[in-house]
Image (tube, rainbow, N blue to C red; front, top):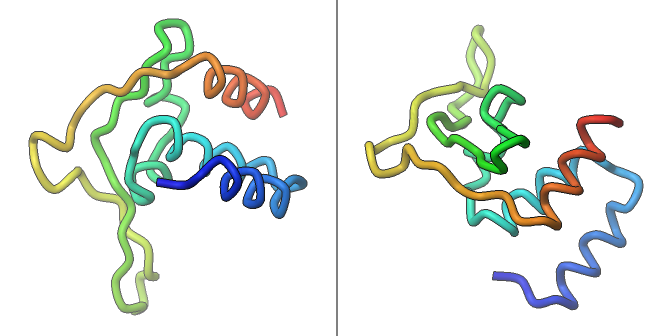
Length: 99
């Protein structure tokens, strides 16, 4: 959990990186794990109903001929879930989608 001061410092540091800011705020406002945020596609985000469906994650393995990053389902059934999008995150995601 970040303090408001830490969030402000991070946002200021990356103020020109819309992708990072959108991912960071998605994690902050939803409690999603990093791998879950990085696995999101627009198909997972329902802006009309203001929900995000979590059902996959990105993880890293030692690099081989096939690469390093892998997409996989979440580890447990309980990890598959729906989180709600608050007003602030909704505006961030709308702006990012239109970027």
